[in-house]
Image (cartoon, rainbow, N blue to C red; front, side, top):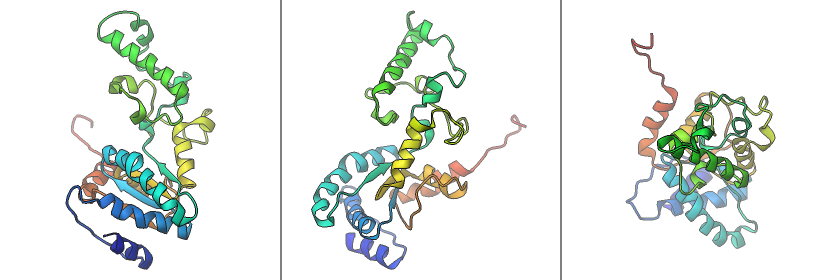
Length: 235
């Protein structure tokens, strides 16, 4: 498989590969991807359907391969992980730049019951952001409920954007994208890749090679991102 992937990259051919679970598919495409990116000076984008596979590739597979291949490639390959804005804490929202969804959360932290639990989670999030280097929700262990996370994050539609936001210089999402522009391997997900391709926002660096893992889910993930629903109730 690794030989076939390397040949496809070298000859600009499409390649479809199927292999069983646990056979080392990720390693088989990451080895030639690292070599291609370093030798050609251009990034390779790896897209997955799930955040779980993203984490496996970034936290386990790539670190092992980078260490092993560094002596052979004569420099250490750079790796970046890019997600949608809602996966990162928003410094502008934390600074009061957006109306709070739960205006009494911090008073509730001193009370009891569900409101107390939610308020405590938000306080913990604020403290975590101060020490976090990435602001990536997946790095927060243990995690927090979605309702609490919404107090410190924004969606892509809510975001002011890098040119308008007063916190752009320290924005976790913008920093992740800046790192991606300087990296050899950029790991993302199908939904993010679809937005980049169909909406023309240029969120990924210029690239010639894309590896789509969990490709059987690509159509559904892309359709979900680029589709809107219209119902009688909404009309």
